[in-house]
View 1 (cartoon, one colour):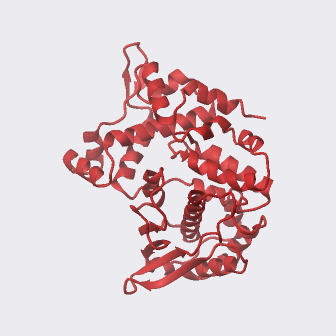
View 2: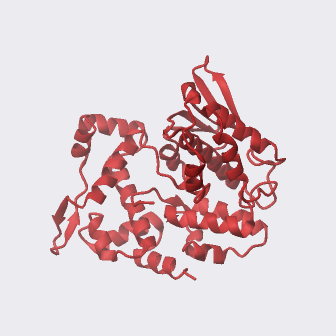
View 3: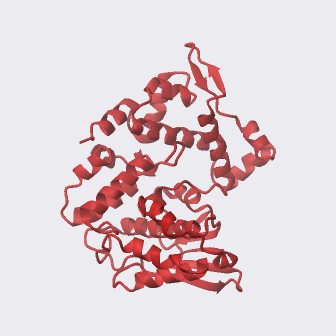
Length: 363
């Protein structure tokens, strides 16, 4: 996974651990394998890199022996997801493949009740729906944690569908049968459309024409996918379909380019992220139009710039190789102290403490 990826909220980390905790497993070694400091779990502002989260999910799969990580009403044996994928490969088109996959999981009592519905909205839309999550709530699992599991299921199935046909499938809408969570701002970039909360059920709609797209993957490409699935599907990059994500993509690209630099008061070269007029020109709109569209999507250029810097900082510190002073300069901070203040505001920790705690978890 490359840099510039969206970080993962601590709420998802806590939810991923709940099944293992219910099974009586010691979660500290699992966090250590993922290089996630246990103290981070006490701060609602904390975030981890996609790499850390993927390592945690893989460790949980091994420890629980359950592809649902102990969060469902039954254990899903390792290999179940793979067999569902193999069953879907022989289908002629996406619609048949998704229906076969949903039927496969309905064979297991207590498994996810997934459904593909054709013909909604006078036949123009297809709907992928989750009926009831992973069965009745288990003791020790909160409603919020069940909501996160529902989100994961929708993400995995949406991205698996796109992988099967080798194309990204833009969602027309996505709705969730629960109130907005604390990390509600993360939903739009994850699903590529504005979310609706408090809906009668959890579901997503897309153009029905995608159902006739041919399945282009084979057993060779599936073996590659399965090396990191299903955790890898959760960690895939966001869909740059909204204006906010297009702006985010432009800012992230500027961080990687390293070409635009400026001189700090201390003589250090710092990154120069493009300003709003430059990004507006790239998107072929006026600055006023870009501001308005971002406002309509509930964000601003400065908020997106801060988010890009935050996610890049968390990922770099988790990787551990880049000196903090160099990271601060690369993110466009002319003074180290300004970077330290910003990082504490974003995550509740200092850069040095975050790196120390992360790398002290290696075993």
